[in-house]
Length: 376
Image 1 (tube, rainbow, N blue to C red):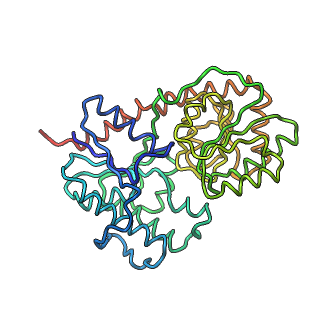
Image 2: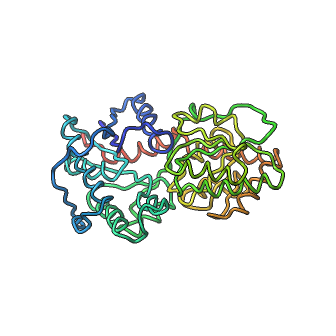
Image 3: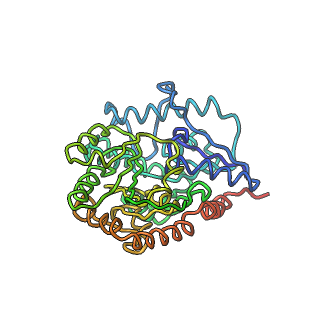
């Protein structure tokens, strides 16, 4: 089969789909499958002019809203770029963003197009304070899910929690498949080490949805209670300056290293002890699986796809969203008892290797792809 993996922007960012798809493609190509990668360059802006129409709703009732207008213009740009660059056909197209999926089906109506929806753009915007809940932008973006159901051949998502979220916006949620993300075991693996002071690490975009403000407050409690630590904070984003100022005011700036953006955090993640990320929402939370494969103990929030990865007090610790005392207590447990921390990390590594290996996801996707194989 000749398969196209259609992304949104190029896979430059670490984590999630951006890091997974190129390695997935490499695995398939080595096994003799014909597979290519396609995406919209970030430099392409305001090139597309073709009108956009959806079958299940009239997007023009939302026109004039900046986020809606930008989304539609990006859709037009994706059409323009695809027509400009794509000069061959495929047996199957696997899209990884709603715009990519809908554009590919529009331009290749006879080709099966499936989509993996990896995250909720409207939830991210809401949690980050960019749009109001249930507002114009929210209604537009959630309407896209029904359009995907109507137009594409199959919807897949990375967690049961996100499947339940999508159920509100589609007519046949039972048809949505679940295939958790897979990770290359050669990229993410433990490294023997011993740290005198517990090294905490988190990797994320610095936006309100990731709950780093809650983490800083919990770290302030750790310091107040006499628990030494270092927090390595990898990532950049619009609230970095605000978080740095918060760390200064909480008197924990000396305990934190703000690295900014890093292309390959997995290169030195294994040398730390605990991965912690108190997200306010996660469709799957790929970075938890990556950290587990690096041999770290896990501390996360009981939200979205995270509880599908962490079984509380078996392979990690779960705390309620926004609960500073609970997060501080969880961190105290893993800092104060190295043996307990090691046991959590060992079981987390076993689970991640079994459940989230790239080998596993390749096998699951093969089964899906073969259902669209043309009869010889």
